[in-house]
Length: 241
Image 1 (cartoon, one colour):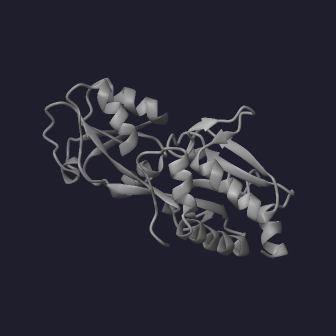
Image 2: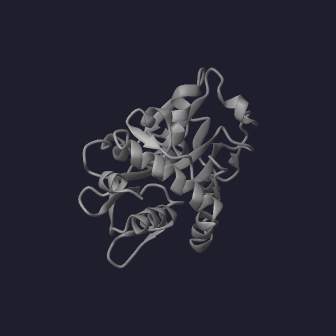
Protein backbone atom coordinates (compact mmCIF):
# COMPACT_ATOMS: atom_id res chain seq x y z
CA UNK A 1 0.00 0.00 0.00
CA UNK A 2 1.35 3.39 -1.03
CA UNK A 3 -0.04 6.91 -0.60
CA UNK A 4 -0.58 7.05 -4.38
CA UNK A 5 -2.75 3.90 -4.38
CA UNK A 6 -4.78 5.10 -1.41
CA UNK A 7 -5.25 8.53 -3.02
CA UNK A 8 -6.51 6.93 -6.24
CA UNK A 9 -8.93 4.51 -4.57
CA UNK A 10 -10.15 6.70 -1.70
CA UNK A 11 -9.69 10.32 -2.82
CA UNK A 12 -12.51 11.44 -0.51
CA UNK A 13 -11.37 9.42 2.51
CA UNK A 14 -13.90 6.64 1.89
CA UNK A 15 -14.01 3.78 -0.63
CA UNK A 16 -17.07 4.38 -2.79
CA UNK A 17 -17.92 0.90 -4.05
CA UNK A 18 -20.41 0.66 -6.91
CA UNK A 19 -22.57 -2.46 -6.55
CA UNK A 20 -24.81 -4.01 -9.20
CA UNK A 21 -27.97 -4.69 -7.19
CA UNK A 22 -29.46 -6.64 -10.10
CA UNK A 23 -27.08 -9.57 -9.64
CA UNK A 24 -29.00 -11.88 -7.30
CA UNK A 25 -25.97 -14.16 -6.78
CA UNK A 26 -23.58 -11.46 -5.68
CA UNK A 27 -26.09 -9.35 -3.72
CA UNK A 28 -28.27 -11.61 -1.60
CA UNK A 29 -29.86 -9.23 0.90
CA UNK A 30 -29.74 -5.98 2.80
CA UNK A 31 -28.54 -4.97 6.24
CA UNK A 32 -30.79 -3.08 8.64
CA UNK A 33 -29.28 0.22 7.48
CA UNK A 34 -30.12 -0.58 3.84
CA UNK A 35 -26.60 -1.51 2.77
CA UNK A 36 -26.39 -4.47 0.39
CA UNK A 37 -25.09 -7.80 1.69
CA UNK A 38 -23.51 -10.64 -0.23
CA UNK A 39 -20.28 -11.65 -1.92
CA UNK A 40 -19.87 -8.42 -3.91
CA UNK A 41 -20.35 -6.07 -0.92
CA UNK A 42 -18.05 -8.29 1.15
CA UNK A 43 -15.32 -8.00 -1.49
CA UNK A 44 -15.68 -4.21 -1.42
CA UNK A 45 -15.46 -4.15 2.36
CA UNK A 46 -12.35 -6.35 2.26
CA UNK A 47 -10.67 -3.86 -0.06
CA UNK A 48 -11.72 -0.91 2.12
CA UNK A 49 -10.29 -2.65 5.20
CA UNK A 50 -6.97 -3.13 3.40
CA UNK A 51 -6.97 0.58 2.53
CA UNK A 52 -7.85 1.50 6.11
CA UNK A 53 -10.93 3.51 5.14
CA UNK A 54 -14.70 3.07 5.53
CA UNK A 55 -16.73 1.63 2.65
CA UNK A 56 -19.69 3.45 1.14
CA UNK A 57 -21.92 1.42 -1.18
CA UNK A 58 -23.14 3.15 -4.35
CA UNK A 59 -26.10 1.08 -5.48
CA UNK A 60 -27.10 0.58 -9.12
CA UNK A 61 -30.17 -1.26 -10.34
CA UNK A 62 -28.50 -2.34 -13.59
CA UNK A 63 -24.89 -3.09 -14.57
CA UNK A 64 -25.02 -0.86 -17.64
CA UNK A 65 -25.84 2.16 -15.49
CA UNK A 66 -22.89 1.38 -13.24
CA UNK A 67 -20.56 1.17 -16.24
CA UNK A 68 -21.92 4.43 -17.67
CA UNK A 69 -20.76 6.30 -14.56
CA UNK A 70 -17.12 5.20 -14.90
CA UNK A 71 -14.78 8.18 -14.75
CA UNK A 72 -17.42 10.58 -13.41
CA UNK A 73 -16.09 10.61 -9.81
CA UNK A 74 -19.25 8.88 -8.60
CA UNK A 75 -17.52 5.66 -7.52
CA UNK A 76 -13.96 4.48 -6.85
CA UNK A 77 -14.33 0.76 -7.53
CA UNK A 78 -17.07 -1.01 -9.43
CA UNK A 79 -17.95 -4.67 -8.90
CA UNK A 80 -19.36 -5.79 -12.22
CA UNK A 81 -19.06 -8.36 -14.99
CA UNK A 82 -15.82 -7.75 -16.90
CA UNK A 83 -16.60 -7.29 -20.59
CA UNK A 84 -14.50 -5.80 -23.43
CA UNK A 85 -17.06 -3.06 -24.07
CA UNK A 86 -16.83 -1.95 -20.46
CA UNK A 87 -13.03 -2.30 -20.36
CA UNK A 88 -12.74 0.70 -22.68
CA UNK A 89 -13.36 2.91 -19.64
CA UNK A 90 -12.73 0.54 -16.71
CA UNK A 91 -9.50 -1.21 -15.69
CA UNK A 92 -10.59 -4.64 -14.47
CA UNK A 93 -8.87 -7.16 -12.26
CA UNK A 94 -9.00 -10.79 -13.28
CA UNK A 95 -12.32 -12.29 -12.20
CA UNK A 96 -12.81 -13.26 -8.58
CA UNK A 97 -15.93 -15.33 -9.35
CA UNK A 98 -17.75 -16.59 -12.42
CA UNK A 99 -21.30 -17.57 -13.34
CA UNK A 100 -22.38 -19.88 -16.15
CA UNK A 101 -24.71 -18.36 -18.76
CA UNK A 102 -26.93 -20.54 -20.95
CA UNK A 103 -30.40 -20.71 -22.54
CA UNK A 104 -33.84 -21.89 -21.54
CA UNK A 105 -36.05 -23.18 -24.38
CA UNK A 106 -39.83 -23.82 -24.43
CA UNK A 107 -41.49 -27.25 -24.33
CA UNK A 108 -40.93 -29.35 -27.45
CA UNK A 109 -38.17 -27.09 -28.75
CA UNK A 110 -35.97 -28.36 -31.57
CA UNK A 111 -33.04 -26.55 -29.95
CA UNK A 112 -31.02 -29.17 -28.06
CA UNK A 113 -27.56 -27.64 -27.79
CA UNK A 114 -25.98 -24.20 -27.39
CA UNK A 115 -24.83 -24.34 -31.02
CA UNK A 116 -28.42 -24.87 -32.21
CA UNK A 117 -29.47 -21.43 -30.97
CA UNK A 118 -27.52 -19.22 -33.36
CA UNK A 119 -29.53 -20.11 -36.45
CA UNK A 120 -31.67 -17.98 -38.81
CA UNK A 121 -35.21 -17.55 -37.55
CA UNK A 122 -34.37 -18.17 -33.88
CA UNK A 123 -35.49 -15.39 -31.49
CA UNK A 124 -33.65 -14.87 -28.19
CA UNK A 125 -34.95 -12.81 -25.27
CA UNK A 126 -32.36 -11.21 -22.98
CA UNK A 127 -31.95 -8.57 -20.28
CA UNK A 128 -30.42 -5.55 -22.01
CA UNK A 129 -26.80 -4.64 -21.26
CA UNK A 130 -26.18 -7.56 -18.93
CA UNK A 131 -22.69 -9.03 -19.26
CA UNK A 132 -24.04 -12.01 -21.18
CA UNK A 133 -26.05 -9.70 -23.47
CA UNK A 134 -22.79 -7.97 -24.37
CA UNK A 135 -21.42 -11.42 -25.29
CA UNK A 136 -24.49 -12.10 -27.46
CA UNK A 137 -24.04 -8.73 -29.16
CA UNK A 138 -20.50 -9.66 -30.17
CA UNK A 139 -21.05 -13.30 -31.04
CA UNK A 140 -24.58 -14.03 -32.30
CA UNK A 141 -24.45 -13.96 -36.09
CA UNK A 142 -27.71 -15.49 -37.34
CA UNK A 143 -30.38 -15.50 -34.59
CA UNK A 144 -32.35 -12.39 -33.62
CA UNK A 145 -31.80 -10.96 -30.13
CA UNK A 146 -34.57 -8.91 -28.54
CA UNK A 147 -33.57 -6.88 -25.50
CA UNK A 148 -35.72 -5.61 -22.67
CA UNK A 149 -35.19 -4.01 -19.29
CA UNK A 150 -34.16 -6.26 -16.40
CA UNK A 151 -34.31 -9.98 -15.66
CA UNK A 152 -38.06 -9.98 -15.03
CA UNK A 153 -38.65 -8.13 -18.27
CA UNK A 154 -36.72 -10.73 -20.27
CA UNK A 155 -38.53 -13.59 -18.56
CA UNK A 156 -41.95 -12.03 -19.18
CA UNK A 157 -41.03 -11.47 -22.82
CA UNK A 158 -40.14 -15.15 -23.17
CA UNK A 159 -43.21 -16.38 -21.27
CA UNK A 160 -45.41 -14.26 -23.52
CA UNK A 161 -44.60 -16.54 -26.44
CA UNK A 162 -42.95 -16.11 -29.80
CA UNK A 163 -39.43 -16.67 -28.53
CA UNK A 164 -37.20 -19.69 -29.03
CA UNK A 165 -34.76 -19.10 -26.19
CA UNK A 166 -34.23 -17.05 -23.03
CA UNK A 167 -30.61 -16.16 -22.30
CA UNK A 168 -29.67 -15.96 -18.65
CA UNK A 169 -27.48 -17.07 -15.77
CA UNK A 170 -27.98 -20.76 -15.05
CA UNK A 171 -28.88 -20.23 -11.34
CA UNK A 172 -31.65 -17.81 -12.33
CA UNK A 173 -32.92 -20.07 -15.11
CA UNK A 174 -33.21 -22.93 -12.63
CA UNK A 175 -35.87 -20.84 -10.90
CA UNK A 176 -37.40 -19.48 -14.11
CA UNK A 177 -37.90 -22.92 -15.69
CA UNK A 178 -40.52 -23.72 -13.05
CA UNK A 179 -42.74 -20.99 -14.51
CA UNK A 180 -43.05 -22.78 -17.86
CA UNK A 181 -43.91 -26.49 -17.45
CA UNK A 182 -41.93 -28.58 -19.88
CA UNK A 183 -39.31 -25.91 -20.58
CA UNK A 184 -35.69 -27.08 -20.67
CA UNK A 185 -32.36 -25.48 -19.74
CA UNK A 186 -29.74 -26.35 -22.33
CA UNK A 187 -26.59 -28.13 -21.14
CA UNK A 188 -23.26 -26.33 -21.20
CA UNK A 189 -22.71 -22.60 -21.45
CA UNK A 190 -22.34 -19.95 -24.13
CA UNK A 191 -20.16 -17.89 -21.79
CA UNK A 192 -19.16 -17.59 -18.15
CA UNK A 193 -19.74 -14.12 -16.76
CA UNK A 194 -16.53 -12.99 -15.12
CA UNK A 195 -17.25 -10.98 -11.99
CA UNK A 196 -14.36 -8.60 -11.33
CA UNK A 197 -13.37 -5.41 -9.57
CA UNK A 198 -12.82 -2.34 -11.72
CA UNK A 199 -11.54 1.18 -11.30
CA UNK A 200 -11.09 4.13 -13.63
CA UNK A 201 -8.43 3.57 -16.31
CA UNK A 202 -6.56 6.64 -15.05
CA UNK A 203 -5.88 4.83 -11.75
CA UNK A 204 -2.94 2.79 -13.06
CA UNK A 205 -1.22 2.17 -9.73
CA UNK A 206 -4.52 1.30 -8.03
CA UNK A 207 -5.50 -1.07 -10.84
CA UNK A 208 -2.25 -3.03 -10.45
CA UNK A 209 -2.73 -3.22 -6.67
CA UNK A 210 -6.34 -4.36 -7.06
CA UNK A 211 -5.28 -7.11 -9.45
CA UNK A 212 -2.80 -8.52 -6.91
CA UNK A 213 -5.29 -8.09 -4.06
CA UNK A 214 -7.99 -10.09 -5.87
CA UNK A 215 -5.54 -12.87 -6.74
CA UNK A 216 -4.53 -13.12 -3.07
CA UNK A 217 -8.19 -13.18 -1.99
CA UNK A 218 -8.84 -16.13 -4.32
CA UNK A 219 -5.68 -18.03 -3.39
CA UNK A 220 -6.21 -17.59 0.37
CA UNK A 221 -9.74 -19.02 0.23
CA UNK A 222 -11.36 -15.70 1.18
CA UNK A 223 -13.60 -15.57 -1.90
CA UNK A 224 -14.66 -19.19 -1.34
CA UNK A 225 -15.46 -18.29 2.26
CA UNK A 226 -17.72 -15.43 1.17
CA UNK A 227 -19.57 -17.72 -1.26
CA UNK A 228 -20.05 -20.35 1.46
CA UNK A 229 -21.18 -17.80 4.08
CA UNK A 230 -23.92 -16.47 1.79
CA UNK A 231 -24.90 -19.98 0.62
CA UNK A 232 -24.75 -19.01 -3.06
CA UNK A 233 -25.38 -21.84 -5.52
CA UNK A 234 -24.11 -21.33 -9.08
CA UNK A 235 -21.24 -19.02 -8.18
CA UNK A 236 -17.70 -20.40 -8.24
CA UNK A 237 -14.25 -19.00 -7.50
CA UNK A 238 -12.60 -17.95 -10.75
CA UNK A 239 -9.30 -19.58 -11.74
CA UNK A 240 -6.05 -17.65 -11.19
CA UNK A 241 -5.73 -14.61 -13.40
